[in-house]
Image (cartoon, rainbow, N blue to C red; front, side, top):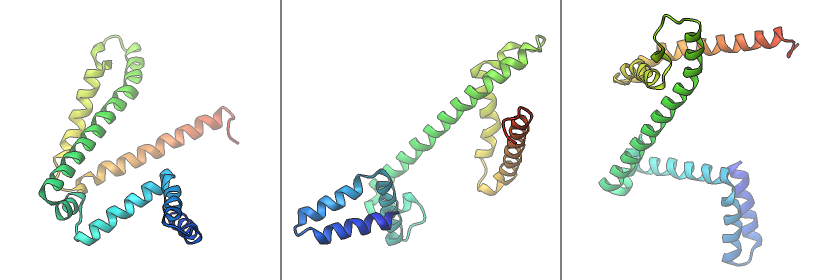
Length: 168
């Protein structure tokens, strides 16, 4: 797709007699969001190759100096922290109604179990030990278990749809 867009821009630029025509053709190609994403990925890969770097931080440090490397590291920490917070919110949003419904049938259990703060604390306590691993190989069993859980859920959804006659 990128090569088609770039070749379209090149052909438009060849037809245009002036520099402004070439800039217009390239600008038209770059206005498309997917072209911007692909072009930025190509820039990142090119920069990493030219710096012989294996990570964003290494590439930024090699090409932008120590200050640029520090800025990229701070940006990545903010990105990962924001992802963590959004995932915790999603977990609490999804688990709270299930826990509330389960507690409606079990009046002998404490009701704080269905509150967001408790769900967030439990999910953090379950996930935090996995973050202490020195490599991602320790997460292989959790990933495998998650895959089988997803297969089970997909099978349950298909069975429920078939039972209701929504699929044949």
